[in-house]
Each structure stands twice: as C-alpha cells, then as structure tokens.
Length: 139
Image (cartoon, rainbow, N blue to C red; front, side):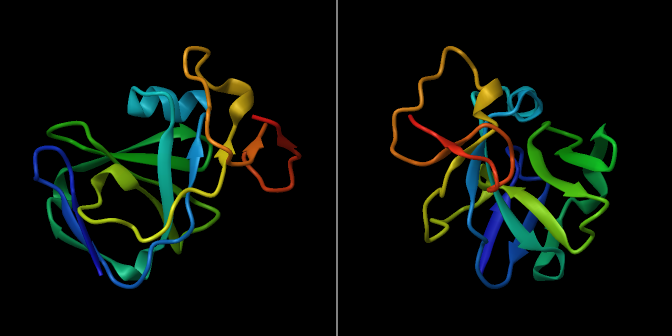
C-alpha cells in the first residue's frame, strides 16, 4: 500500500497494491501543468485508490478533449490525470507518493516537445510521441 498527499496536505490518498510502470512525459501540456521539464506519472486502477482527505478540494480541468487534469484547489499541486475513454484508470503524479514506488521509470515520452534547456542524459528509451509503438530515439 502507498500513501500520498499534496503540498499543503489537504488532499490525501492511499493506493492498495502496486503502482504501475511509469515513464517521464515531456509534452508541453505536462511541462506547463508541472512547471518543470517533465512529469513522472504512474497508472493506478481507480478502484485501488481511496481518498483519505480533501476529495472536495480537488479541481479538474479538461486540458484536451476527453483528458482531465486534477489539482488541489488550495495549493495547486497536480494530483492525477484521467481519460474519459479509460474510466477505470488514473495517472497519479509520483511526486505525491510518500515512499519509494519500488521500480524505476521505463522511458521518456513526447521527447519531440521536450524543454530545450533539459538534456536527457540517462539511457532510457526515448519516444517521439506517447505510445510504445513509436520508434525509440537515441539519447
């Protein structure tokens, strides 16, 4: 089980079971939503997530058709993203998790729009888009 919370502590949650494999997303939307070079997101089955506090302060924004990003309405911490087409899954922001997720990132996605000031220096596969069907680019 994992616990997590936003910056102000107003939104808290537990996740039963394991976190899914995760990757770094460099798309311009994730960069803008996080205020950083990329986000670290892990898929979580919605049925395995329990809100322990602050569910009422979470605000959602439809950042693109069918994709919603959720934030704490008090401190602005990004909490999750969800797709209408995948109602049983949430993409949790790993920076909120209190403990080591138990595994490491698998890849970098959307590197075609990565921040020009951030060099990717690890050996993880890099994909131009957001699906594993894209060809990996060399680092």
